[in-house]
Image (cartoon, rainbow, N blue to C red; front, top):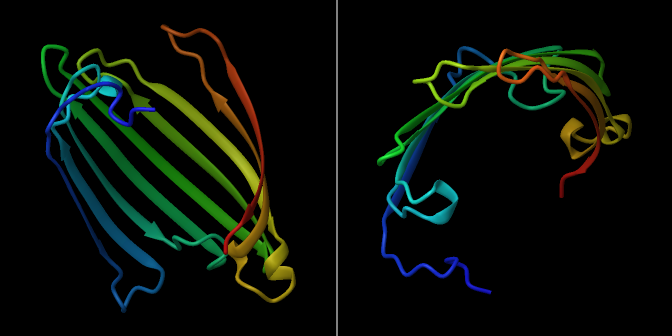
Length: 172
């Protein structure tokens, strides 16, 4: 196959990330990301784009503390004749009732085009059980997760969407 999709382009992409975890605030992580890609490839409808993100976490790693909170903002700005700005916001909370289990909930809002203003809301609730923590190993190493997600209907999309996620994760 052809990794460029048949395109012969010379383009630049640059990205950077910064993160900070203050020693005085155990479990807190603040970070940001920025990127620019001028490739104008087929997956972006021939547009260059800039992307950016910011996060604030208290307990970034699953099972790392009794209560975890996360906030994320992610954006993309596609340039060109079809200028488009995308923004996603997410709030997440998790509680650890035992040393080998966690329950969580997340609310996500995706605005696929800020100029048009329509936004989608997604709600998720679930739980995970760490097989590795049961054996005294790190929580994130081996775990089962089950979650229910619901894409709530809006004016443009009156369909109520349902998703059941069952996952087994092994980190090595």
